[in-house]
Image 1 (tube, rainbow, N blue to C red):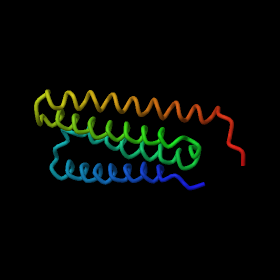
Image 2 (image 1 turned 90 degrees about the horizontal axis):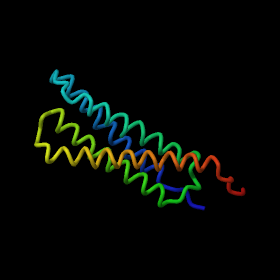
Image 3 (image 1 turned 120 degrees about the vertical axis):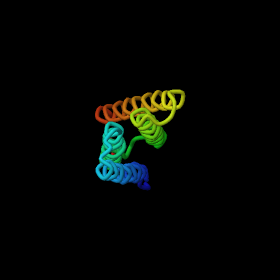
Length: 134
């Protein structure tokens, strides 16, 4: 049996969001402009923390989860983070019209919720599923 690379993908995405988040935080500190702090916090929580926890689950307890579930979870979560954070940044920083950030927020929010629902169902079903024979 080969080891799934999905946990690594989740951790790589999480690390990317963490690097963006710390640079963003430093920029806000240097410029003393904290208008987008809420988007920064969402990036850190949804991008860094949540994706890292999902990666940890798939590495430690989710080895038997089908790859299509991991791919769907990864895709929904990343599209959600990218769209939601971009939309929040535009809204909070008053950059761009509502015709742009409105759809970004809508798509981002729906994808994020769908990703969390899929992850929650996956965790719960893996708990109640009979373990694979050793």
